[in-house]
Length: 280
Image (cartoon, rainbow, N blue to C red):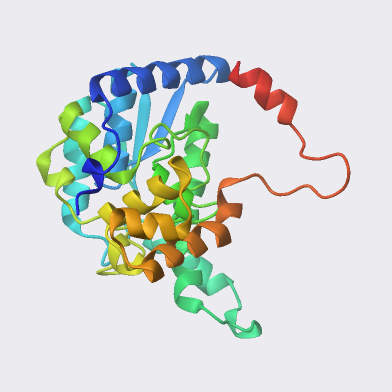
């Protein structure tokens, strides 16, 4: 199954121009001096970097590997992107910060039900801290790398890699991001990589979720964009019903990750009017 072939194709030249223009407009509205981007050496962050270059934004790149866990080739690829785009970059391993949190936090006092995931999520939260420290120091905003697939499934760490100011590729499914990458001439070595959040050694996105991105994108597009029921989606794209149900459950359970913290009471969410004014 090829996810990109099962829903309408986008004109990537027009898409890249639209996203670059919107990103430039966003920057102007914030009054910031530039942007910060955590560059992993993977597809999504590389595409965001290339879009920022197209938008003529001054970007400070942070390469934040966990030595011994993340593939050294990812750092090499990230450096190559930084040099190709002529962006300033800093390489800051996060090992010491991760170990400092482990030393400082008295885990034995808590009923630890899922320590592997809990500690894995510390890493993107440390990276978020470094990104915003840089942003505050240099009066920048933080660019996010989440795509539509990840956002819909909640496949991100809340207040980690999901803690950003703007999501340049948030409207594109993962399979569309790959097509856009080819249009932007992102290196093949990055485009062909197996997607990984790098949370632990050998971890892959598709392995953790249990479904390929082609299938994910087809299912999500059928349900969210075409308005199909779970049963209709399974039949229409010839995917087993339990697979569609598992993706639907993940969407529902993780919906809180892509929304502001819920304000209880009769007055509703704070800032809705401000957001409307900002976006107009």
